[in-house]
Image (cartoon, rainbow over all chains, first blue to last red; front, side, top):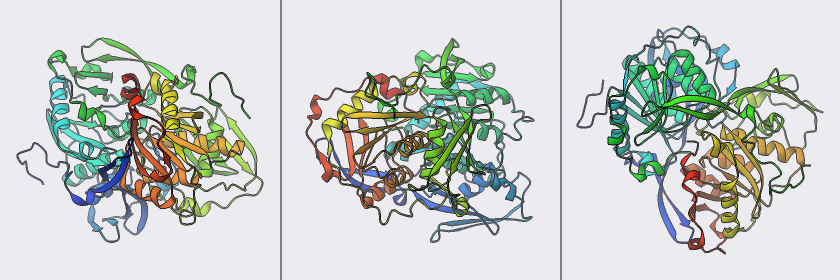
Length: 292
Length: 292
C-alpha cells in the first residue's frame, strides 16, 4: 500500500514522465513554428486468463490497474474473485489477469452497447443490471470539502495542465484527494482508479469521485456500480445521467468551476458549510485546456 | 436531396426539438433552485440484415444516418454495397439496414479495440487497415475560410449552446458549413455525417470536417477513411493523432478558438489569406459550455 508523501496523494499525475508525452512541432495562425508537449496514446491488450478481452488505447501508465479496473467495471471480475497474478509485458503491450477460478464472462462479451462517453463504447454485459437493488450509502457531503478538493486538484501538476487533451479522475475522501489518474480515455482513468481500489481493498462508502468528463449515463452507472456515493464533475450532464443518479441515491454535482456548481441529485446529502462568495475563481489556465 | 434554405445549412441543429432535451431542476451553490435544459440519451439498436450489431446511446435524431454511418465507418458497409432498405422503428428504438448482398462482417466483430475517444471504444475490425494505401487529395485550405466557418458555426443555434454536454461535428465546403450534427457521443455525430454522405453520394475530396472533440488517433483515422482531407477542432490532440495525420497527408488543425489555431499536419496546404489580428475573439458563451 502506498504511503502519504508531502502531497496528500497516494498516487499523483506524473506530467514529467517522458514516455507519457511527445514533443510535437506545429505552426500557429501566423505561420510561426510552435513546439508543444502532446499526450501519447498506445494500445494495451487485456487478457483474462487465456482469453483476449479488449485492446485499450491508453497513455500507458498503471497498465495493471487499468486491466483490473476494466475487468471489474465490466463485471468480468467480481469482488469475490481471487486474482492470482497480473502480468504486464511492456514490450508486447499486454496485461494478463489470472484468476483462481476461471470466470464465465463469455456471455458478457455477447452484448454490445455503444455508450455516449464520446467514442464507440462497448459495455460487455448489461451495465444497468444490478442497479435495481443498489443502495448507495447516504454519506453527507460538505461544500467546504468540495471547494477544498477542487482547489487542490486544480493546483496539482498534471498532464491535463501540461498538454491538455486528456481526462482526469480523482478519488477523494473528505477534503483530501487520494488517487489522481489521467488518461486519453476518461473511462480508462476511472478504471485505473477502480483497479487500484480492487487491488488495495479500498471501501467506496466514504469516497468522492471527481472527474473532468461529462456526467453521461455510463459514467453515473459506473460510479454507482463502484459503490461510490458522490460524483462531481467540472463538466455537464445528460438527462439519463441525472435520472439514474436520482434512482440510485447518488449525489451528482456538475459544472463545478470556481464557486459555481449545480447539484442534480442527492441535494439532501449536501451540507452547505462554505460561503461560495469566499471562493476565488479558478485560474484561467485551469479552465482553458479541458479535454473536450 | 435537401435544398438550401435561408441558412447555409442542408442540415442544422434543432435545439428547440422537444424530444432532444429535458427540463431538469437542480440547485446551485447557494441552494437556490435552478431549471436547466439537459440533453437526452436514448438507446438505438442497429441491425445489419438479420444480425444485431450494436446498441448506441444517442440523442436520437437522424437514426437512419447514424446506422448507415456507423456501419460504413466500421467497414461493415463498403462504398459498393447496395443498401436496399433502412427501416427505423421509433417505438422499438431499432434501425435495420438491409443490403442486396449479405456482407461478411462476422470477422470484424471479433476484434475489439478500446479507443481513446473517452469511452470504452470498440473498433470492429482494424481501423488502421487501409491507411497504408490511403492518399488524401491535397486540397488547399484558406485560413479565411477557416475563420468564416468557425464564426458561422459558433453563431448557429445548437444544443451545444442550449444545453452543453454534447459534441458537434460539421461537414463544410469552402467557407460554407453544410451539415451540422450533434450527439452525446462525438462519434455518433461523425457517423451521422458519414451516413448522410453515403446516402446522398457526397464526394469528400473538397470537404472540411469541423469538430468540438479532441483529435485522437481514432478521430483522425475515421476522418481519413471517410476520405476527408481536412480535420479542424476547437480542442486538443494526441501524439498518435498527429502522427497518423502526417502519414496520410491530412491537414490537422487543433485548438481553433477565436483567431488562434495550431496546425499539426499538412501546413503546406494552408493558404494564410486572412489577417488573424482582424478576427474577433469568440463570445465567452461559446467557449464556456464545451462538452468535455
